Length: 353
Ligand code: NAD
Image (cartoon, rainbow, N blue to C red):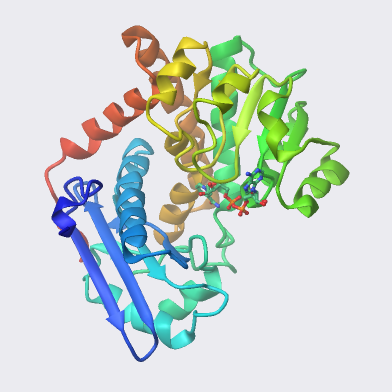
């Protein structure tokens, strides 16, 4: 099957395959759309079972970045990079430097950043061979790691969803069930605790859930029990695809608002959520804090300006919720429409100088 015929190809502008035998680098960069600006998206390193798995992942992720940045009001397009390999065994300095040189050859159409399997120090290595790297300012005002800002944006969006669904301006007396208390989930839990919410958490890594119990007084339940707990809000902050036609039947919460990417296992789940009166907060709108942070780091803008931009996630969601209600559509469909209005209506601009 050619790349053009791939079911997830979806009008990608460019897909580049990098092969550097000396370092063992095998990587794919997918650039979905640059109408709004250069394609910015993280570089994931993962031991993919096959080349097809890697291609599918990079195509889906890069398209997702186009939508995320467009809805977030950023002048950025969508792109992503995947390195095929085990980050614990296969990663090397020469591999990262070679990747930087390849990315440089794309003349700024794609800008990379950290993602699963890569880190800020890895990005610093890549920055020795290309300037097209973002989120490498750990000593600066922003701190490099975007997780705290992703968590803050998720908190802002969760409050907007609570206001819309329960007509309540604060979180006092509400219970939030958090699935996954890793980097983002734990920071989110802290914001929620400070705002007066009760917490129930689950994590497959016991140390993480125990940290939430000890430091934030969260009640811990087994990973399989988190869907059915008596909560007002369900916050998926682990891996994608956790909301499916089975788990949706267990949910008692009337709001879903979490940071995980691609939360809905199948698109039809959105219809079931609508029928069950559960307000779904579209994931890529809610978790855009990280990309906003990285975009502001790149432009060397202040943390204050960056946080003001993250606060707009709440207003954007309110507009999406109202439009969805007026049109009787699932919220994720309306979010896609908002994104497409922004990036498809723009004339293609030259990616970067
Ligand atoms: P992380 O790896 O630090 O945290 C994920 C946590 O989920 C871990 O503690 C893991 O043990 C736990 N987990 C995995 N499977 C689980 C399960 N079935 N049940 C319960 N817990 C489970 O990752 P993160 O950086 O916190 O990201 C969390 C999610 O948010 C991911 O889906 C990521 O793609 C998304 N996201 C993150 C950012 C960011 O800035 N880090 C930005 C946008 C989106």
